[in-house]
Length: 443
Image (cartoon, rainbow, N blue to C red; front, side, top):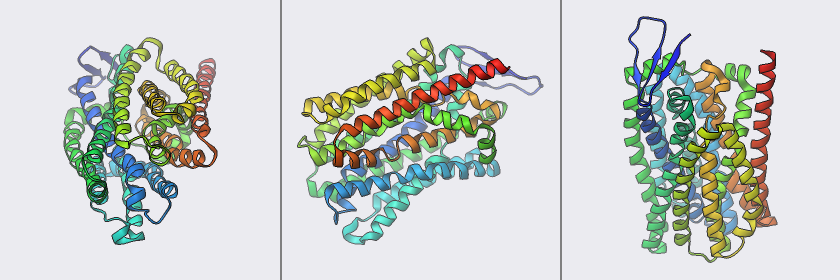
């Protein structure tokens, strides 16, 4: 057995052997987490915004605008389908060659795929081969994202005082709004500064070049942490090492499913306030898209405030109750969302700003709230695969499904989609509570 003694600046792990004990500062781990997540999410949102704003016109000019956007969103979903496969592959690589090799391969693959999209000629030059290559690069992005799990969020959660776990848990989640703000601001600037012809010919490629460069910097920053002796020793002492996925699913499969569904309210919100509205504004509104992106940037700052607030709220009331309360808030918001999005520019702006605030509050605690159920041996692999499944179930097809249903049957389906995510979270949390009470009674 081992014990954890926490202080405000460092955490010392006391074992029962005579080996020298390392001290790991939660703040230092947090820096690595934020850098890694912000770079990944910037890359993530660069593609997401382009899938609504650019790719329908560049890669699917042969289709009507609505159909072209649906094709683009179908390719967008491929990364989420491939992500669990990337996790399985990367866990095997880590067991065989180590965490540093795995992370280097993943981020190199992510940078290569992103660069491939940046240089990819459109349909006008390559025809359907351009579409096939876009799908390939998007799939490789998903494989790379699955392999980019470094375990730092789990290490951070284990190396923080119990009464501050909500605060430290939200730090990695800050990467999402930060990445979105930079990506949306860059696209807004390019779209408003360039002519229509220049933007669609070459201007849209610059965010992908920036994403490639940022990933290189993030790679070295994260490797500097995860391959040092202190972190390797700490990871091993906390048993944050990969296990075969088949064994994980056999022993803890029910917790993987519950964990994925417990986060669904925030994951359903994710693309319904970021990517889907861009396509709706382009297709069914006369609101200038650059102005709308600026509003979304403002929403991103509200999301940052929400993520920060979620840490304080979770430490006061608990992470699971916070997730449940925010799921109820999203359920209420789902009743107003269709009317707001389908009204004038002011109402749409309210939809975006309120939606981003709710997204920040809920997403701030959506990751890892139930990972303690995995126990030490399965926590590392379980946390990664649970996140992959939450993205796949809750967010992968959200823009495609929302746009397709809303175009055919009306905006009411946006509300139904959000409501389904909120209900899934509440049911998963209820099942989680029932299982805890059952295990306590049995023990």
